[in-house]
Image (cartoon, rainbow, N blue to C red; front, side, top):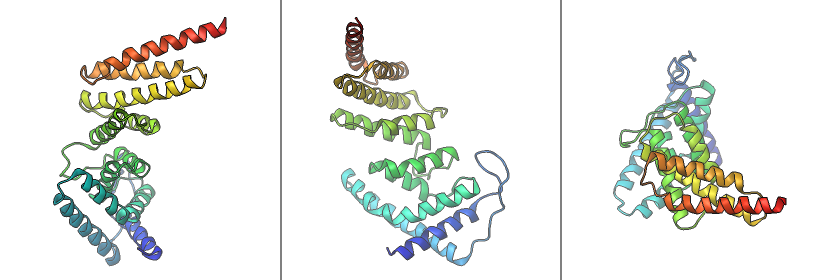
Length: 256
């Protein structure tokens, strides 16, 4: 896609978002500007992006392999990037949430392919404005975001690979007041606890005081355990408690 076409698509998406806004801000309930008339170019562009999404969803439906689905989504996402950026820009200008399936779908696909840098602005928008998820998703946005990112982190941790703690903690903060099943939130707290333990061990290896990190790790994992007894943190809690005790002992010996 040429730079000129990408720029045009972004501008049209921004105009589409502005035109589709209602007269009330969904997040605050305060009045916003009245919807703008949609011109032919904007309507045509919106119809084209909608047709592209339907085509891509059908293509994904025909793919059986999860790995191949993810590869296909990674290939598809750049085709929506400028439209989604324009939607976000228009929505921010109006102070309201975006309607339609394109932006929440791009959010989910970005999570699926592990592009959390691209996913986070979309997650923030969807959660802040209570943007409706497409009907094909059984879970609400907050539950989907928490569970998918927590499970991705737990899978990485099981393979002894780190996961971005900042992403996990940002998701926790964004969804702190959302109602969801305890088992789902427990997964996120488990993942946070594991990454804090990893950070604590790394800090300890450099001679830094890892006590605060170990304490935060235990707090997260015990909270996870309290929400769901079979979340799988009992053994790790015992190990972290031993590491914390050893760290406190080393600190005490160093002070004498």
